[in-house]
Length: 182
Length: 115
Image (cartoon, rainbow over all chains, first blue to last red; front, side):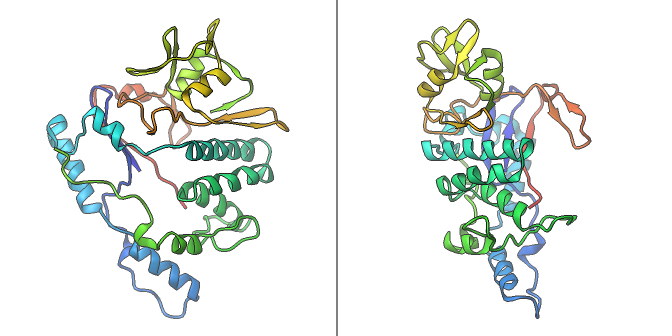
């Protein structure tokens, strides 16, 4: 996610999906002999839309042209394009933050009920889910996070099943609107 | 915003939420929401302000903390396009970084996670 802020301290594009480079995962061959679950995961990752070329072009246009860039929004457009919020999504954010706080200050078990509630309130939020999943599926002492985030005993969901339930990798995130707004 | 009390210095409330407690109400940029009783002797009465701004409050009684959700009064994450510059950020080396030092330049702020 990225936000653009101009020289006057005004947001000219609100938080949105941002990438300037096509992920190698989009083009990788699915290796033979790997577990079926991993094959399915890679298949869904390959379906995630790639807008990196368009986003990179928009960013370069703003760098070159500043306020005259067609991709720099007016203040009203920025507010209108920012994520809709509701009591449920805000409450989910408060629960997630409470979980983060308790995870740091008390311990992991204290965080779990709040993260479960955040998942239920805002089921489309991958940040809340993946942060929680990776903490229970990464083996103790591992040097890297477990990216598979598979079925576990702590949370109802997991990466693959939740992605499939949400419509697959094609719907993984809300794409940035890079149509020229003016 | 994590709180240990439901009365918070107005400056602290503003720094974290972006909402300033003023005589005319709770304000962010040009947007003001009437909130009688929210400001009292330089302190924000969080229960009053939260109710007016549509901020959910989660309480953990075991650990004596509250978590304040984002305002929902405007129906959008942003109430204004005016950016709030946090006083200090921590860089990858653990050093303080003055975000305001970037004023006057175009900024791209990127959030990323390793998972």
